[in-house]
Image (cartoon, rainbow, N blue to C red; front, side, top):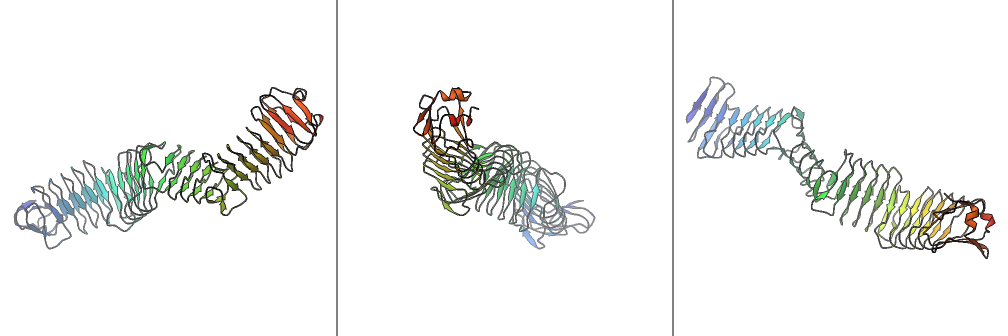
Length: 506
């Protein structure tokens, strides 16, 4: 039954009541009744939880609503609020704000860009046409909402069904907010929120709190806001590339994304390249072979699973390789580095006072580095400077690379490769292998042990001892191999014949 007038009362079932202009009293009586403002010529604001007179706007005066369960808004921009009962509220046209409060409510945005707040209870929220929001603003309890689910889902505020919703605004709790395959704007609240965009071109905003943002596929913008915030690639199998110092769009392997106000990164299952900025960053790899660089700032770098490369950069950093065979790298650095893998506490590395844990290998930089292994098996590779590399215990592989380097294997069966430059090489105790190749310049082996150590001569076109000895001469108590083009190998305290069974050519 549809009833209109200034004093509108009905006791005849499920009625629709229209007050019109003036100060009206709408009394629904028995049944499920609707206050209808569809004919209003402007914005209306109606709150079913108010029992007294209320100004509804649109020059309609002040209405008193009694025993009204449902609301029908205008064609303009309305604020429609339910009660503790089960309400059906329809916004129709306009950019409406609709709140169900408690009760099992049905909220319908209709046309326009609407904001729907279900409140407590098992609610159905349908945004209709337009770009519509579900909002948990003003709520202290945690919310969980997945826009890809159209059926009922436990949101922490009830068992709610969400349809035709593009955007979410979180509340004050630690919310879990997930988008869908469309374009979503998902905004956290004051809690420590986890926000995932899914597919689509998404805008994720953490707002206050320490938030985790996961853009997913698509060209996304992620803004952490206040707090210590994360970008996460957890659950992703494809490789990610992210540089926190870049504020404009960057190709991340998951889209062309823009990152703002983010301090920390968590990698995925791919072989990720994760780079920090000038601030203090916590960068955590995933299951792949990750390359993690802290740059400046006091950073914590964690490789997690996989064979990772960690470069703290400047600042007092903590580097933890985790599971796998992991590297500390000084590549790209011009200043000298000093690193001792046997030291687990803070040590002055020349790039800060750093802590190194669960690291097996080292790669030097452009300076004159001092690189020392531990009791395990280490691969230590120098850079372009005049490096001092010591393997200590364990079966180590030491590579000088460019520069005039000093290599010492220490204890264990080590392999020593001087590389380009004039290198001085000591095998130490154990069965060691010395490698000399074309283009290595002038190397000296200081402690060769006959019938224990071996020398591998590579890329010189020699295949046996008879050919090799044509390049050898005795020089005092030493043997000198001169292969031409500046490639000279001196072996201390041995003879040409003694080397007969100690040379390898592959």
